[in-house]
Amino acid sequence: MLKSFGIISGFLLISQGKVNSLTENFNASRHALCILFPDSNSGVNGVVSFSQEHINAKTKIAAVVRGLKPNSLHGVHIHEFGDLSNGCATAGPHFNPFEQEHGGPLDEKRHVGDLGNIKTDERGNGYLAYEDNQIQLYGEYSILGRSVVVHAGQDDLGRGNQKDSKTTGNSGARLACGVIGLASGFKNLQPYK
Image: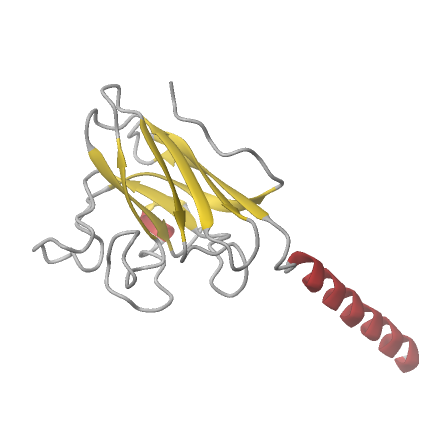
């Protein structure tokens, strides 16, 4: 009996090692998708895509958000948790594994989750696209399973004089959110027309 248990345990350990090596193939491209749902009947919704060709590549980010205030800027962040059991309120703080102050997406020192602002057109539709060198879809600091939150106000990128400028960018209430999940692959999002 113990011998059978040992053989089965050994097989399970080997199998687990094989699964981990397949899921953490750092040379394979990875794609993730986040569907944004309105919080508290805000009417804001959208999609955010992430694509990274290999572990050392920059991550391509593209977002389309609808239902925002026309001709305005709105903060967009990756938050620590993918727990949306109580709407966007349970997404937690910005994803900040290196304990930095809040900043802009091009700042060297910032929260990993600081994506900056999305700019809307006259219809309240916004499009954001850029490449980021801190966002990871691989390893210990992966954003998979975390959430994206769109805020009511402009992110001051940590440069404002408000008490929460260095923690949240003073970007206001949470309007929409969604969990970031692994995707099978897709083309980057195109601007909303």
